[in-house]
Image 1 (cartoon, rainbow, N blue to C red):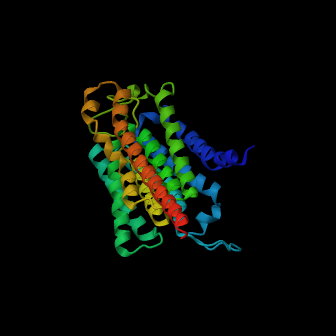
Image 2 (image 1 turned 135 degrees about the vertical axis):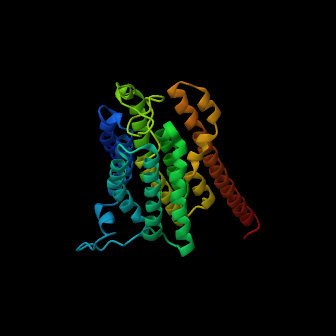
Image 3 (image 1 turned 90 degrees about the vertical axis):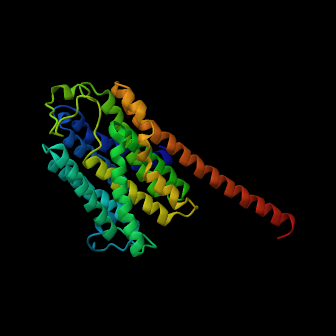
Length: 333
């Protein structure tokens, strides 16, 4: 087998496929009837996709050495490896958030999500530090994590399609910034989100599951009948997506070697905010598939514009450098 293909299979496709397979039971009855459990399962699967890719690219010791000394391990300690530890912590955390929200009234469920977002922001600000960090930078990192989680609430029923887009964008930015390892890990999350989104849209019986659910105005336990094929963006899933996307962006800023602007990384994190761009069309259509499309298309268009801007700026910079070299050669510099 071609070495490049084998590498991509090992660090992107297989981690994404394994994680998507773990998410599958949450898309089928009886679990599909319970929105909070669905989000918990999908959130854990998304974090697992990054973790499996991380371990495939590096080694399980890269995670273990973040919390313990391993006998005979002489590999260097790298700060960005904390991302693997965060992903590992988010797998059980997603399940915990889902269980805490299960059968809770909607207002209380949202309060629990905000509580989890605050915990994630504080914990990552204190324990996840990249090169060049200062107290002010760490505070900003915590704020970015919290803002990112809130931004994901606007992804609505398109949360999985938006995850595919956002982590695909982060993968591209990591590649443009010269960080190939981070790019493949983001790629695994993006592929996992795409696979799960496709399954959620077409799996037999998934779209009908909520017709058997008991949904009341005071409960967030059942999938809303107004959008029976939709995955919610209210609990564990957005905590995982928001935390991982914000920390990946911060890592990309710290290790960028090819001049991708921090503003671009931040914009990539907040891409889900573009879900409100076509809110009128979203409200106007009764078709669930079209509602999902109008929730997602703003994020997709903004992501394309963002990547196009970075590619053009880097292309222009290379042209300028090339032109300068030609002039130096011409004048004997």
